[in-house]
Image (spheres, rainbow, N blue to C red):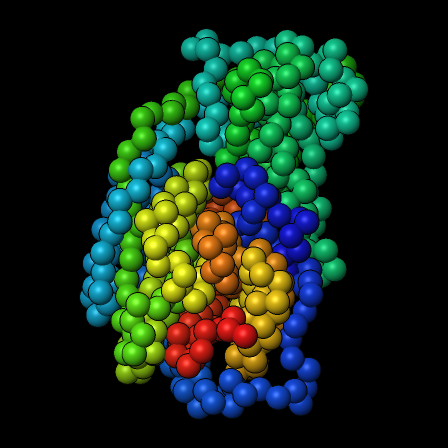
Length: 479
């Protein structure tokens, strides 16, 4: 559901992936009646895994603790430290071999936010500073507004932009079965809007929240500054307020006042959490399954990415409950700092560089807690990628009862991407997440939006794929 052309990473503001949905591409699902040698070998054990996982609510119990007792978990925060300690202890309690691995992460703190229209009306607006933004001067900024709807219009209005606040009113299209979400094409205004506006002399930039549906909730996320542009403060405003400003500007001049107080503090120590179910024959060969333990500093981080983390944690608990120990080691990795730096994923690849040749697969879930629909697969070698997709499609036939048998070529995930240059096959768990961006990076990303049954199905899909890949006599991408 994620064609590469539509992807843009919310964490690093560069081409990658983070929960984007889009149409299935290069579908290698097996047609009815196709031979399934792997499924034939593992059908009985996979059925037991699926039945056990679907009857279990352990993932939801874990997610409830993570969200309700700990809450949001931005890099550098005490709550992220608490979440890391909780995850490590929980994995130990589930019987895994557990450790944490040090990662230095950025420490950006939001601070106070005041955004208002001062003319032709007076109106306070809801806003969230974008991650990485600098602060306004202490007294704030009051300036005229220039509304643009795309990069071309920004260039056309560059003379007006000097000394102004640029408002990007760029609408994200609604999700469709044919095209998925338009997130990848729209998020570039959040990522790059400040620097593009600053190059024409703007004093600040505001971005319409990257969502197709809004109930007055602003969506935060990462932005980046270009080295060849001045740094200006930037924030997200609601869809409703972006439309209001646009309508007012069509009738005459609009001025706004901004006071934003974010700070970027020195890097601090964090950690990736590692839990292992050691293999019985080839323990030095590894299947990685993971999600990111951090979140933005609003809401509870339930869909993004608490759901992915607890899915991976519970998958190994289900395998242990069934007494299943595969040939290879299955390693759950809860990556830190995906949202505003990807330090966890990058550091993991660096720290484990010597063993990436024996990492037979890396699976990530970072698209929310929704019904699983299949997997996307990336491999640096085209022929090996085709073999990997074909074999995963074979395995996925055993997931037909939960509707997760689709397999495609596509980006797997931001945190596993740094392993790809070493030849590690990377896989993303794809889910039916058409409502994901309604809650994404907002105060509304809370536990009540997650269905326990959907989480259980995600656990089933992950546990089956991870177990079979780890237990196969040969590597999943072997000739």
